Length: 205
Image (cartoon, rainbow, N blue to C red; front, side, top):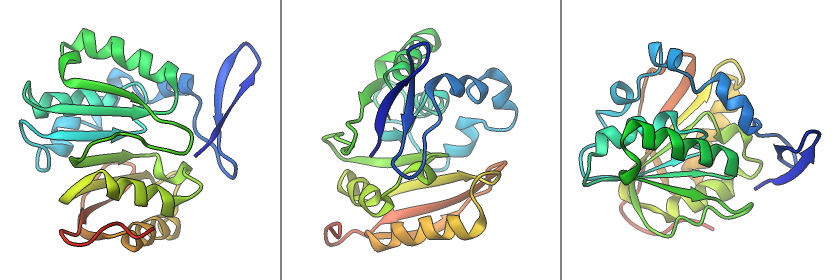
């Protein structure tokens, strides 16, 4: 999906071929205690995530939502926190231990062109990250492969960076790969839509 380059002071910068991903250290601007004033994970996801579920947080960063999801799935559930940047995952591990939920969070580093989760889940979160993916059709094809029939994916994109027309293009890509829009949600500063994987057939290549 992307390549990694070294740019000054050995900082790892993630760069897409046609776009870019925020460098791991920039996540500190978003993943901070003040964010809970307008993005409360338990409140946003409690209608979709229940105890015992296995969920996937793609582009998890330092785990702001992963930790909130871990509280919702409980001790019998599991959150797969997936990201391509190792520094973010290391920070997430420390935060999860501090929050007392490390036993229910599985940290997973994605490969450049492969999600590689290796199991199916009931709920997927893609928060403020799909717009950075250059090949969205391939992205949704891989997502469909690891989502259970009737499983849901919650797509959230930042209003300040993703226009309404660009968001619609993302939704069309999801529909082309076997997803049916089953609702929308209000998330502050964001455009959001809920999709469900059709219960029949297999993902379209």
